Length: 242
Image (cartoon, rainbow, N blue to C red; front, side, top):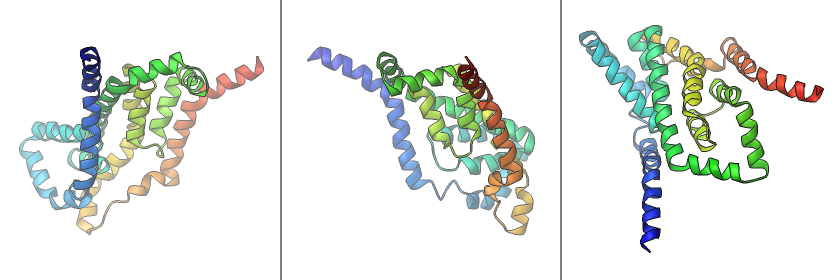
């Protein structure tokens, strides 16, 4: 009985960060959706600008801290936070603050998932046979390309792109590298929209968040995705030609 308790406690302790993230994510989705919104940003814009002008460094640290928490706990409002980064700090360094904070938050949830489930799940996949193992081996062979693809393609939810790599044993370094550079294109678009919010507020309008699906924006993003997929295509043709 004591042996079973000893083995259960470490397992539960390892899963506590992931459990906490899931609980906070659910509670946040139920309670914070109306708080972390564009309307809230519009109502508090003057106070935010005044605080930034009075304490720039403090504003940067507070903003990045809030953004990291939003991403790490998968709370609603990540898009609004990105817009706020552009609104408060301009396209640059706003995009740098946005991408850095998003990457840190993503790494936090990645580590929680891998610590709680990923190592054991990856080990079971390695020890097993069949389609799942072949999928994992294919991912290993094209890991960088796949990681960049799930960041560049707007259809892949950010939360999913943070969890899946942890559950199949992707290394932390590669995850952080591909996250930081993979979200830059999308981050640039929304930070740029945020940098123009002053005019949007003045007209009493709301920003067009669907701009990322406009042909002149989506085209280059899909072009980058195709470039990321190119190594996989080359390998496929080499195998067929061998």
